[in-house]
Amino acid sequence: MATARGRIDKRQAILDGAFAVFARRGYAQACVQEIADEAGVAKPTVYNHLTDKATLFRHAVQAAAQSALDHRLAALKPLSEPGPDLRSTLEGVGHHLVRLHADERSCALRRLLYAELTHFPDILDIVVEYGPHRLSQALADRLARLVLIGRLHATSPDQAAEHFLALLIGPLEARSQMGTRQIGDTELQEIARAAAHTFLQAFGTEDVNARQPAG
Image (cartoon, rainbow, N blue to C red; front, side, top):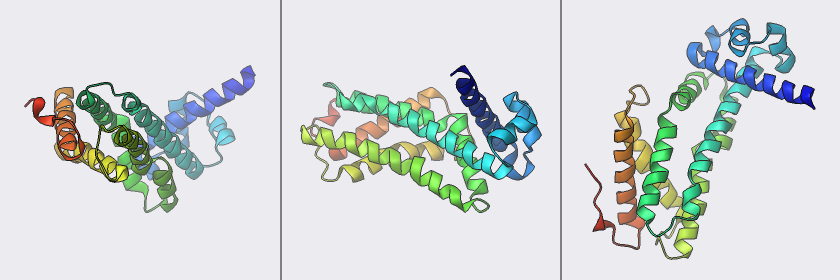
């Protein structure tokens, strides 16, 4: 059992190290020895776990994408029981999502996907399985429950989810210059507040003008 656990931990260290090196250097310039050094393992150990550099790249990107999705899905949890102040809950969820989208690892993952897509067209499958569509589907499911209990009047929860995410990610991408400019938490909160306010103006069933967004 301890041996199996150690193998899993070592594989994860290799995937983390590989992602860091690929994100820093790109696929072509990355070397397996540097990945081994980053992971704290011997070079043959890398090959024992993942047979070649291309396989290592695919698995590292998949692991990073899955981790990113898991964190985003966890950020939606407050919408399952939003309490009486739906707007505050939406702001909190939105703030959590934009913080995740703006963190360095997420920005590095997007840069890596854009840069290497032509060389690895099959990584589109990773985008489909772990990308924005999965998050939008999960958000739509939570919004549909709010429609059923009369908290929202969206005729299409799928469309409502797309709108909410667009209200968050559009301004974030513009302000951060597509992830090349770091923006502070106060600005992230402003984006989340504005997104929640506009979303509830379109889909809310309560008086959204009772509390105007700050700024």
